[in-house]
Amino acid sequence: MEFATDPSPLRTELRHAGWCLEYVAVDAGPGRSNRALVAFHGFARPLEDLLVMAERWPEPARLICVHLPHHGASGPCDPILPADAALEPRVLVEMLQRMAEREGCDPDDMDLIGYSIGGRVALALIVAVPGLWG
Image (cartoon, rainbow, N blue to C red):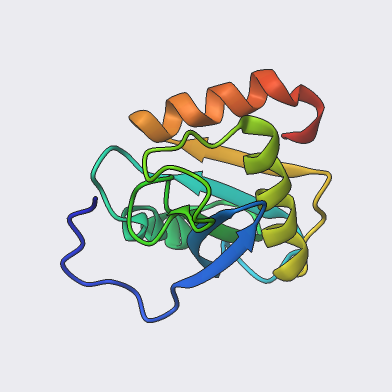
């Protein structure tokens, strides 16, 4: 579910452990960096909501805007998983680290932001893996 009026042509997907996560990665802040800034949107919103952070982020980073599970093209892609399956935090972290690596970033030291339900997901990941996030 999402209400995207103008989906980014930069949307891409990562598949891992029976899941597909759709995302867009762009440079943020002044210059280029190998620092990943992972961003989660609100309920029923598109990942493009967070692209505005690229223009306003005060430090160089690679902004990775991720579609939450069951939004956009993100969701289970293994037919064994039910359509409404829950994505375990461990698997989500693995996927985010793979995205960071794919985007030329350090997968073991990332920043994390989110609003609305994306903020709740971010908090759950901070609790699950506290040493990973700046």
